[in-house]
Structures are given as structure tokens and as C-alpha cells.
Image (cartoon, rainbow, N blue to C red):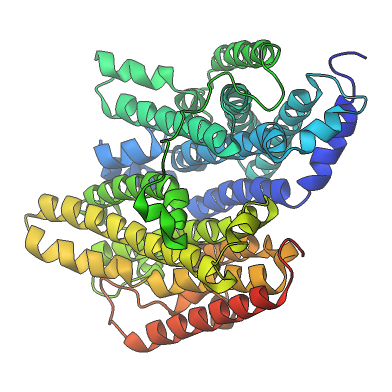
Length: 536
């Protein structure tokens, strides 16, 4: 039996398991790119309007750190590349890392891969299958992006460079994830290390782009695979040779992953886990203490990211009025997205609404820990003690609910501090923007309640909670631009959240959203008490 025997069968199995997840990733990234190009074509239909936008952008360091250094803003394609390429590259990287880890280290951790390897399956087949699926998904993404851009009237050469830049970024981080899957013993650790590399790549690109191009720190952009995607310069005199650098790194990282896979035992990692203390602390004597221990690492990472994001948004806000001055259409869109008393408040309200939707992602992820503990057979030993089902589930839900509040508070404080320092009004802006961020909490709790209801009543359908998050996110961001009917917009709980700062604070929708979340949680807990543990 060869080392790659069974690769084809595992590829087909992986595609079947990801038949819903991967298409969602691909369609969202490609759709966002196409919608962005269409929006820019509508907002800036003439070269003169695009030149005015480029002049208003100037050298705003916050925007450059967020989106990258613009190379050509006189064309719709150049605007789209500046606005979306870095963001889309990060999304493609995350899609790739999750895919590879899911079909390699996660399968080992669950014990399923040991059963699979007992058949006619070679040592390298699982790793090869994960990489092939990730590489293929990025190729499909590239094709859809090229089609979306060309249908919007963009040049084929620039569209091809844009799509290939996304694919290559995904390939690089798929190879990174292949290596982290060999180093660690847990899927969470493998995803955490690979995700940290994505974050580091974005940070290096941001620091390098903000720096003066003629100074040494500017070189940091060239140390970042995300930076390489933007250095291809789609629609601005493409640099095709950059792909050679990225593909060389893909080959090196992939070869290293195979070399590491040959040096370890099945189920083991090359980096042994750190041994824990001989005795558990007193705070682990309760289900709540155990839940906090399981969630604290992920919550700390999310909170740090939200605080940084808040600081970036707050630093950008002060100059947003100058950026959009003279463009009545864009000002109208931002005003409809949130706020009624000025372009700055409208921008802050729109961004806080987006961050609230992202906080719901954490709420769903933390709540789904209930299902992973159940299917991983870790819940049964706990429930075999004096701990009841409701108490065990509520402990995780309490951490998830409180954690969501912490994230929104972190981003609100970050925005308030950065915006307050820039405007010289720290005492007013911090409490004002902290409150504006926390207003989105009841809507995020509705997603927590929906996930709990699915967990208790129909655990096999918990994936629908992710579909709901995606639907609400798309409605919130593109519904006003596409001028969807308000009845469609009202499907999202975030459509009922008061848009502040800039609007009027109404407690009625927040109370109703909280009541809906509580009812969904209660329904889920009742369902969990009545069904068998470990069943669907």
C-alpha cells in the first residue's frame, strides 16, 4: 500500500462533509467582491469623481492600515482592489486553515481517522485530501471572483490577477495549517496557531503600508502573504512575478508538513501538550468554573481583537467627514445605514452595527461548545455526577452571554478612547460610544437563543445557526444598498436595534429582543432535558 493510497476517496468524503460550509465561504467572498465593484461603479461613475475620492483619501494612516496602500483609485477595479483585496485574502486564508485542520487534526482528535487508517489508506492520504480540497476551493473562489468582476465591466487581466491573488493567499495558509496540524495535538490549538499567523500577516502588512515607502519598516509588507496579494496590484499594472514568490513558499511549507507528518505517531503532535497541575483549583468544583476554564482562551483572543478593531475604527472616524465630502449619494447611504445627526455618527453607527453582527459569531461559537462537549463524550462524565443537565448547560450559556457583552464593551471602549483622543473630548465620547456598542447586545443574544433552541430541540440542525448569522450579516450590510423591502430587513434582529450614536435610543425593541432570546433559551433547555444525551 502506497503512502497516498485512498486520497481520492478521502477527497470525496471531505467534499461531501463540506457541501454546505465551503459553498457558503466561497459565495460570500465572491459576492462581497462583486457587490463592492458594483457599488463603486454606482457611487463613482466618472474618472473625476474617483479622482476626488482619491484626493480626499490622501494618506490617511488609519484607512491605509485597514485596507492597504492604494495603487490606483482612478478606476473602479483599482477602488475594488484597494477596498476588498486585503479583506478577501484574510477570509480566504481563514477558510483554508479551517478546512485543512478539519480534515486532518480534528479527525485525529475525534478518533475517526484511526478507524479510517485501519483500511486501505496511506499515511499521507488525509493530509493530501485536506490540502487538495482547500486548494480546489480557492481555485473555485478565484474563478467566481473573475466572473463577477468581468461581468461588472472590469478588465479581464486585472480581474484574473485579483482572483489568482486570493487563491494563492488561501494556498499559503492552507500549507501553514497543514504544518500546525502536525505540531499540535488538538484542532483548537492548530486553528489557533494558524489563525495567529493570519493575524500576524495582516499586522505586518498594516505596519509596512503605513510606514514611509522609502524607510525600512515598509519592507514588512513584503514579509506578509496578505501583503503579497495586494502587491500584485490588480488593475494598476499587475506584478505577475509576485506569484512566483508565493508559490515557492507554498511548496516549502507543504513539503515541510509532509516531512513532519512522517516523524510523528497518529494522534500525537510534535509539540507535546504542557502538563497541568497535579490538583485542580477550587474554582473547578462547579460547572460554571469548568465552563469558564474551557471558554477563557477563546474569549481572551476575541476580546483583544475587538479592542484593536475598536481603536482602528475610532481613529478613522474623525476624518470620515472629509473623506466623503462632496459625495451626496455616499453620504445618503451611510446615513441610511445608521444615524441621523451627521456623517461621523452615521459612520460610527454603521460600523458598530457590523461589529454587533460579528459579536454574534462569538455568541454562536461559544454556545455550540455545548454540542461539541456532548458529541465529544465529555459531557457524559460531568452529567454522571450530581450536576444536572440544566445547570451544566446554563453554565456554558452564562459564559457565552457574558462574553458577548465583554466583546461589545471592548470595541466600544476602543472606539471611544481612540475617537475621544482625536477629538479632544475623551470624557464624553467613551461613555457615549460604550453605550452605543452595548445596545447591540440583545440582538446578539437572540442568535445565542436560536443556537440553544437548535441544540436542545434539533441538535443535528445546529449548523442552521451559522446560516442565520450569515443571513443577518448580509441583510445588515447590503440590504440598504440594494434597497430591500423593510419587511425583509426586519427578519434580522439587528434591524430592530436603535442606531446610535446619532439616533434616538428606544428601550422597547431591546426589551423585546431580550425576551425573544430568553424564550429561545428556555425552549432549548426544555428540549435538552427531554432528549437523550448524545442523540440527534
